[in-house]
Amino acid sequence: MNDQDDALDQALAKLDDRIEPERDLWPGIEAKISERKGGFWQWRVAASVFAASVLVGLLIIPPDDATTTVAGVTPSEVPEADEALFRYSGLDAEFVRVHQRSLDELADHLADLQPATREVVIANLKIIRASIAEINEAIEREPNNVELRQLLRMAYEQELAIVNGFRRSAPTLERTTT
Amino acid sequence: MLLTMSADRQEDAAQDDIALAASGDTRAYERLYRTHVPHIYALCLRMTANRAEAEDATQDAFVQAWRKLDSFRGDSRFSSWLHRIAVNVVLGRMRSRKREMERMRLVDPETQTATPAEHDISDLERAIAGLPERARQVFVLAGVYGYTHEQVAEALDVAVGTCKAHLHRARQMLAEQLEATT
Image 1 (tube, each protein chain N blue to C red):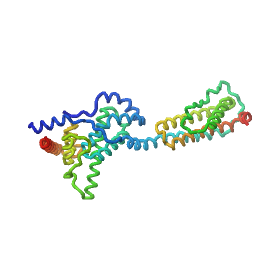
Image 2: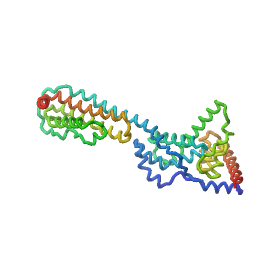
Image 3: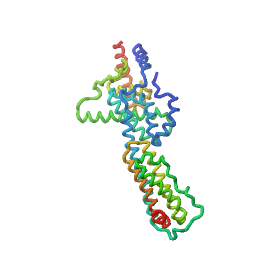
């Protein structure tokens, strides 16, 4: 090895393995990966909302004996509406109030339903509540995603549709709330 | 002495972020980006000798890595895995550019004088940037980052002997350049 090689190796040893880019490259990267991930989330969330909406149709079928009281059914079986679930919805206070009142009524009269219908109601509410939680999680990742917020509103509408379906199939509730 | 790609401590601390990022957490991925971007950008800049191209290649590398995170099994260090992706991205972009230039018959990249990077660089960095493209690629991968001739030959799709010849040529040119500047 000659002097030239020595000088080169010494210079190589001093090379810094870190060079910072002159501009922040992350925004460009984030935009590209968010496009893809956003699509993934939206597809997944939309699928869950759609699944819930299909099941809502089952509630339209009126029970043979809507006044049958089932022992052991408690309001706690209806998933509670956590206030945090509304934080990204942009829904006004009146909607939230009506929504909560509907759920309370549902809880109060759940025991009036036939067991099979009751199970469908509860199962649907759990599905839609899981969808809402999933959408909220997605919005946390992408706070500016307008489509996700639209999906969230759709999910709340689906939840109300479930409650309304229950109202149509529960004569005793119709009597008490109209 | 060869440059190391990342510190072991960073690797340990990054394990959680890797798992989170693989599950879709972009914030965790941003932390990984912040940790590794100086190493990846340095590689891209030395390979391309062009700041704008290095920035684009760095972005592409991180986007590709994000898309492949599911396939990262931890068999190698994350920094090494990311480094390989970046090398492939840079070489892929350079091949595309070369094909484009050949179609347009503008210049021969082998004889093109590279644009020195605009950051505060040493004489050696400037000399590396001035190497012919293929010699620069070989020198950066084998001479700076410690890839074996076999690995470099495979990445560049050339014979091992060709790779050795390029490295020898690059070292000669760099040594002469350094001597001339001192």
